[in-house]
Image 1 (tube, rainbow, N blue to C red):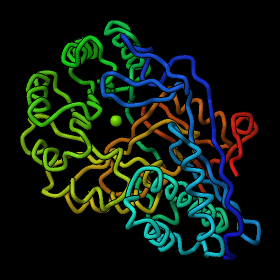
Image 2 (cartoon, helix red, strand yellow):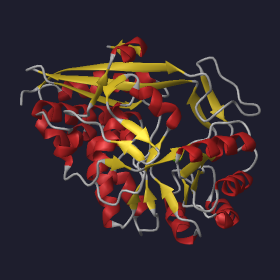
Image 3 (tube, helix red, strand yellow):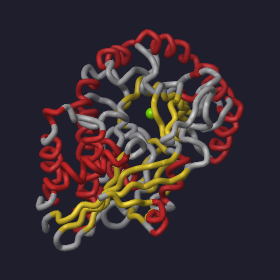
Image 4 (spheres, rainbow, N blue to C red):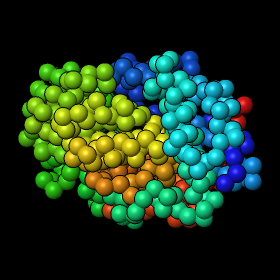
Length: 389
Ligand code: MG
């Protein structure tokens, strides 16, 4: 395979009528740069959907696409790629994708760049290199990653972006009528109370429905444990991200103490970060996010989870669909897959910007077919994309 010759970066910006996670809550406002702080967890969110994409081309013209987070300060990620990583990637053989990840990560290891924008940039490049290799081989990406365990990737409904409990219940009932059987609520916008909201959903959807709640890193150990005990009668499958990401010992302890299983991991970029938290085997679900991990680290985290007997419930987030496609290919080959998150308000729009047959139905995702990711930007994508040099 010929060497990497060029790397281009793009910011994809797609307007949305209702902000991600639902309408603005009491006292929430949009600042001059188009961001808002969700009071539920003190976290910054943009009012548009945004991601960063890369296109890698080799000397003989082979192309691969990758994508990562770009919701906040996307030009920072582009600058890391263009200024730091691309000059060291140009000239490398895409066959060496795992060694490339290790080398590029190592460039900034001693400067505290073991997560965040740096590893996001790596994720985009890693996905693009894997896509390029599979396309060049004329094979679907999963075939390079391992043995396919499944063509249908089971999923669950994530988010009921409505302003009140009554509206959320109506939204969930409409999904249930279509055949969806598992629902996760985002507590950061549970303005009427988490326990009240989950109880209302259980009453409306019946005992058969699977219910989960994402706690968005809001609590300390004692608060989360008290909440888990209050939620116990609601019969939840898991509570997600209960504690601040820095509280590693607390998360391991809560996994032991909580009467409801704990899920975590959407913000973990590497197996270095994951292994500290999986230590002790107290978590029950790990949620790797392809937009942060890339394929190389997604698979390393999944292998680590398997060694600890932890199920994998891949995360889905705001993006243009490229890292989503990568996540499905990786999910097709790993052991211990539970279900893959389905962000309905994002997925349906991203597939419109891609040439792909990737799809979602109430029983799960259809793995895209064709070489590589089985997904590439189409004309509609280009109306929302800006090149960043
Ligand atoms: Mg989450």
